[in-house]
Length: 229
Image 1 (cartoon, helix red, strand yellow):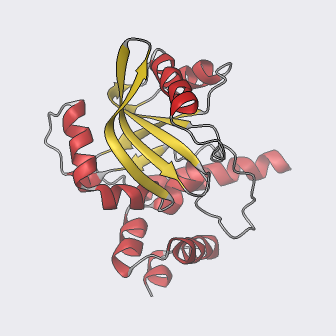
Image 2 (tube, one colour):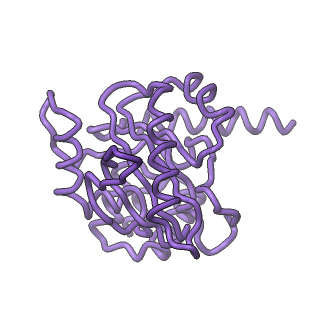
């Protein structure tokens, strides 16, 4: 009933049906995903599949195979002014809701995860293991707009994880830099020759207007249809 009443198209209904089956949602979890416009955010993402993920939308694990362009973290309930440490602590405190947002295949390993390189210690904000990808996933949290120099530190972290933490049977580690905003051109230029498996996403602390997302989705579909003609 939630899916029928909350969806405006057959495609959206199928999306939430498949997602509910894959993720084994409770009623509360499904309601939250519909309220947060997960379908629109998923479809508006640039289409990047998770690294090492090759399955298509017709296969069983669709539709949770993308790192989203935008994550909604309204459940953190942060004040107007907060630090990166406040953001990290709020995510750890609300870990169940965070994993609902990023995907239930993520298993939390730890925060401020220490990796040693030479005589120096470095600390990864959040470290997860993804069961579907069979790899470690490092999250770095940034308050402002994405900057190209963030990639250098993430590459360092991923190399350290692959050399010293990753098990032999696991896939190469993946990085996600989570910023409060990003310039798509800066992201594209920064990643164009970057060899590591790093993706850039932004987060919002309030629910995004669903009508705005629906309008953007209609515009995207219209553009795709025109390109096919």
